[in-house]
Amino acid sequence: MLKVEDVHITFEAGTPIEKHALQGVSLSLEQGDYVTIIGGNGAGKSTFLNTTAGTLFPTMGKITVDGVDVTYMPEYKRARYFGRVFQNPRAGTATDMFIEENLALAYRRGKRRSMFRWHISSKERSFFRERLATLGLGLENRLTDKVGLLSGGQRQALSLLMATLIEPRVLLLDEHTAALDPKTAIIVLELTNKLVQEHNLTTLMVTHNMRDALTHGNRIMMMHKGRIILDVKGEEKANLTVADLMKMFETASGEEMLSDRMLLT
Image (cartoon, rainbow, N blue to C red; front, side):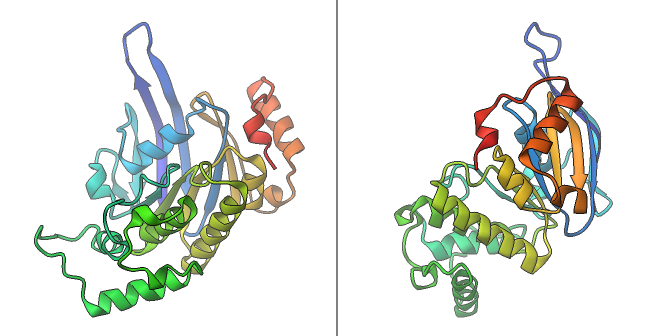
């Protein structure tokens, strides 16, 4: 359903600081695939997500969703296919707006909106309350609280709900627990798994944490210097250890894995 074909991105082409951020990235995802993506700094993970989401356009290559070519489709139009949660809990929500207003924006994503239509119907409010209750954080009783009053974990949980309120064809998670304390990160990851499983969402999750990458999802990919150098799924992935991944990285890349962040437990 998501197909990426030979995608390249070159920054500052033709200059002394030319950088090949993506070099022939290709993959195909089936409905319900939950892929964790790991790799060191500069491996191309976030660039790949940005290209998939439409924040960046590839220098060459093709991206399709359900057979629709979205390669050069503007990000705001591509939003009908993708839901996204960012690393910064403040990035996916509007601080000075109420919780219910944030949810209304997400609920109406991709629909034509009048700048004067801010009325939230009782039916919508009931739906928002019901979906918030599934988070188990008590936010269903705080619909008219400003989002800026929420903790980082609460905001990230709200961002997750907003990204999946209208079920996306693909959910993109860009290190969405990296800015949280360990205890809160676990809670947000559990909520992530719950939403992904309940709605059978096709998901790409970038993480620096190798143990999280092994624990979550049915497929793991490793990137290095703008390329996918490992792609393991199913039972083979389920049997992998961190030590296995390190050895596989060194074999595929010819380099040692030195990033402490990737060894977090």
